[in-house]
Image (cartoon, rainbow over all chains, first blue to last red; front, side, top):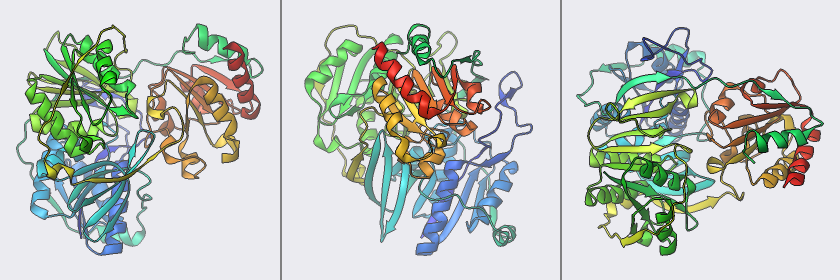
Length: 245
Length: 317
């Protein structure tokens, strides 16, 4: 079984978000970058499936050289080899094109990734990759089991869960609780250093959207504290001031 | 300008988020055609005229009752081309978002999701999208070609303007290849109000000490017609089902009112609630970080405060 796992390079979930250069660039100073949390779930499940069914896990990242530490981390938790497409991931369409181009070369049984990246939250790349490759795409996937050539999944829907089946190959955008995040152990970290990491140049792609600028939300006003004995006052405020009741 | 709006339904009713998509398209000043898939009563579709749709295309084939991503994408692309539409508007959802990604490639459109406001067309075609899980926004120019706008909840206000839409049958050829994914069953959550769409959300955290104490959360929620949510530790410990987990890696909510009970307010939880209009925090620890993100705060024991609040709400009704 050949599995391709696509990972994003994103700011840690606790990062303070700020912009520079006239609000046109994300301010990376002091920011810790991690494997996208949803991608990390996909990676963990891929490693489990590989262990259960035998096969290989290839990690793919579209990013510049700065992303290599997180690629090594993915190798340390159990991926066998990695490919980095040497380009800034400018938008979903661009990234999807790069992934599809790599995937065409590898005849993978499944292409897994997170349901969305936590920087742009687009949730588009899995669908676009599926469309580019003519493969089914499913997202957001909460469980994934393989039986023979068939994948059995559950997908989160508003207020519930949908169970579905699809033959391999397919593309899936994953989320919890598909697997528990894996923490690399010393042996994994050592072996990751020598696992193959291939760097490829991007294929041409038009930019579909152009960033104008970033902005931060307006800051919250003062909090109003209400006496725990006086819930009538809270109800009054919610009714008359906030007008939400 | 011809705008196609893909509308989703649940239990035979068009979802409120889809009505917002129609309102959004109408506000843009377009001629709005809605597209509904699967078996839905004609009267329900005609009623979309009341919200701004002139016409409704109805692909009523029962094969489309289940939301199969590829099949939906093909049908939407087909309708877009048939109508010579310039823009597709839809609501972000677990179905709409992945579907729109495939449609974008089929019709060669630029696509932006999580859009929070109407486009600014004074110079180009700029939309504002939520990024970094609600912690920032990006203004994006979508260019001059075909466009797909996937809107976040509350991007437009639903208005009833009266009138009925004309419903037209739409029967595109369905390709078996698009039905490679088979839906075998669906589990519906029991609550009356769906969390991602709720106007009021009441959430509980570890401060509630155990799943047996959720009765008072549910009582408060039912007095408000609210959906119930929870923090990540609570769903991780299986006190509550996963689909109630609100936060960075769970459901992102944007209700009018969010009430947090016994939740300390980790940054990952705040990421899921930061587009709520008003936030009430009830916590016995006055240092809980959630108070910094709240509009109204109550320092007190949830087991005393919550029943009092429920009673005060009932008395005020």
